Length: 482
Image (cartoon, rainbow, N blue to C red; front, side):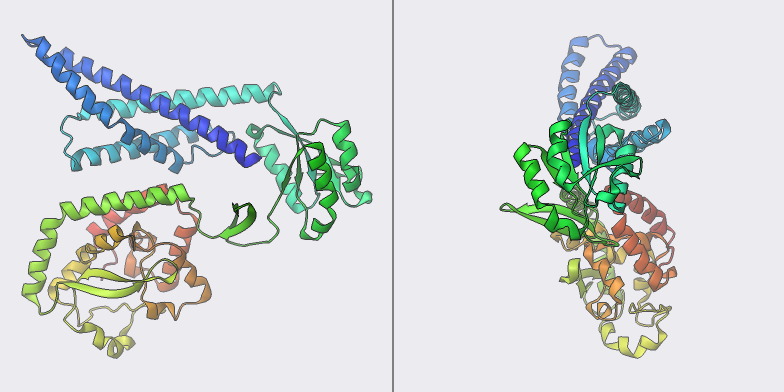
């Protein structure tokens, strides 16, 4: 009920936002054309009219990419979550952050694909106009919603079955989300001694046996059962009564107190399922993440081909052995895959690890050693600059890794993990992560694991973008590189 209502509101809002972005695109393009005409003087204006016509076709060909970028950016900024409790400046700041993200993506795509027809004046105009239009549109919608709710329109009457802590939490949610348009008529309990009592501002108006009578006497649109597991055998008759009356019924399915995992309802061929998952991403978000990985890895491989070739020649000429080092690592949920790196050690370095184990400078299963004698001089440079990680772009393209995610561990390290540390395998490993962006080897093992779990628990497309921005100075200044 609530989920469907929220999804409908969200889709309507997305449609309005995309219309506003399209309008701002048209206005920005028109302003840019007028500026060009103002500064241009030519004896043959007809020629420029034809040129501008072809340029306009090119501009509008990239509109779908811009709309997609805006859609992803607004979602990442949380602007499709409940906005009734958001302040004016919070909404404005979210729109400005989204516009900045779109401008960066648009500029990057223009540079990579060499879209020379895209002018800097258009990008700046589009940034300003789209921000203005979206802010005006969002403020108008918020004001309209507040007016409609204040007048008492578009409410649904609901009957809540249950008076426990979960029912109290639900009542508070309804109070905090007036945009849901729900009005609680009263509460139902199994115990007659609860009749007339007040629970979080709502009265108990009946027991289970009274539900048919209440449905006849009051206009009830939906009934929500928020009951403990022990009640399941005794609410069947009440469910039948609602079914007979044709009243929509909902049952809260949070029967188990999970500390980390969140529950998701689904079905297989009509069989209802209650799933528990620890990763926060929905399928469409993970799809966007994968599309981003593919685009970035292909662009990176193409742009860095000369660098790849130069490094391969240098590694092969300065030390004996292959240029690319291959090592088995553990990926998503423990899947093993071959990870690629530019070789930074002498050939056969893995055979000497056992004898150097006593010099491990990091507590825990991971092996990190200061001044490792197996590292070549050129290898030390590759590590400090993180250039040794570049071949992992091929792992990203193959789908074994992501651009952002926990670093892939060795299978031998996982065997020594504590139980809580194994949860870091629930996300696809990446080229960079919070640990990488926060000092790498300067961070101890336990904090490293906690940073990875923090990333998994709070994951969003926006968080990936922030980590990428933080990784750039970490790599440039070789923070924590070893």
